[in-house]
Amino acid sequence: MNEQRQRSSLFNALKQILKVQGVRYRDLAELLNTSEPTIKRLFQDQDCKLSRLIEICQMLGISFEDLLEVAANNPVQSKAIPLEIEQALASRPGLMAFFVLLVSDIDQTTIAEQNNLDATDVYLYLRELEKLGLIRLDPKDIVHFLVDRPIKWRLDGPLHSMLVRVNQQFVADTLSEHKVIGYPFYSTSRLFSTHSIKQLNDEVDRLYQRFQHQAALDQMFYPSEQLLPYKMISTIAPFELARYFEVPAFSQDS
Figure 1: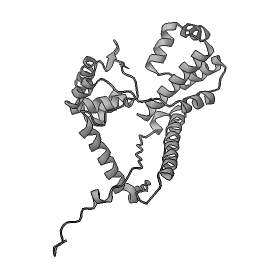
Figure 2: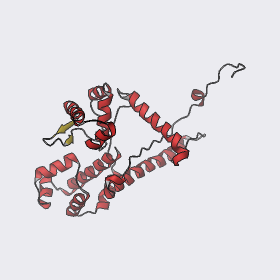
Figure 3: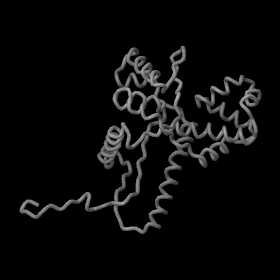
Figure 4: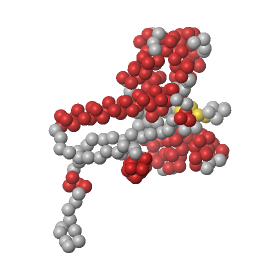
């Protein structure tokens, strides 16, 4: 999901620059010696090679680094899909899992191989997602997303239990692998003023933005086979000790 978030940031930044410069899709198409529908499709699908992005930047008189900076200063906001669509996905965990992998830019072949699916399984899943209005399949069975990405799932919505389970499993796996593999994991509780907590939250937010920015660079300059998915979870919240450490009535066993 991080990859799509960064891609959306870059294309949103491009749209902002086009608007500021008064450049229309038609104008950009002429500069690139292509058709307006091709440019519209490029921005809709948010998919093109790095060399094409650099070429567009050159036509607009900016560097690719400028584009990255604009994107970093204007992070993409997650958008929710209709509640009834979430409900439909929640009622079919397999379809939800397939969609999450697909929307995370994992290709159909990899999904099939990792889950022992045959071509019919993949096609039927894709057709169900098409019926929900989440994707469109072109005549060559290439997937085009019909929803804005990244998607913001409702934490208190139909998928609540699934999202909680995934995050709990991720934290449990990270804890168990912490000493073996060396992944950093920190957990502590101390007493703070609200002012200090605000400052710390700002620092965590900057780390999150750094995490996203580095992902954008890696996805631009490294081949896909050298990239692995990583997940970051961070929170600073009141820690109600009495809620987590109940003291029962005294007995010889307590």
